[in-house]
Length: 168
Image 1 (tube, one colour):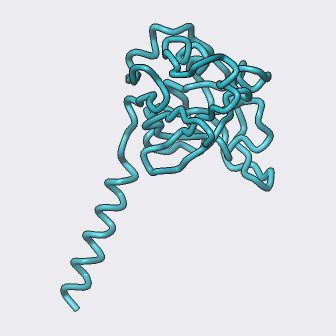
Image 2 (cartoon, rainbow, N blue to C red):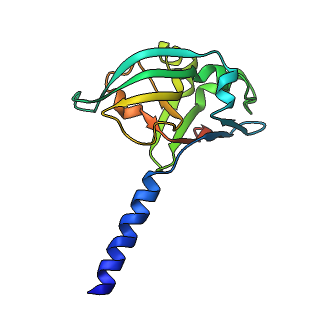
């Protein structure tokens, strides 16, 4: 019985520690000529975008939370510094981006969605925001698309990498 108590304590500790991980940098990799690592501090060199607040809705369009004092940069501004490995611009229509969080949550955007639709003019990499209700880990790099209806579906907290891939 004592061993079970210790095992439960260890499991609880590990889950709390895993949730406390912070994302202070992410890497852009995949079909690029040279991977690029962006740190929380690097984000300050890009043109800043600020929003007062956003409501986060789940897939059922139920209000889950609100984020306030949102500061970030447009993803397109960051991607402008990445040299994509493509034989011609026509091939880019076959590309997609997989955003992965530190907890392994993944979200996919197509190349055309980012560069050939209004979505790309909204897609933000967040450097800071306040959560309501208040939660820990708000210093994580995050990604959000304010134009999404169910904003929580593609709200990536704790971004660790963006993989640029090509459809086979």
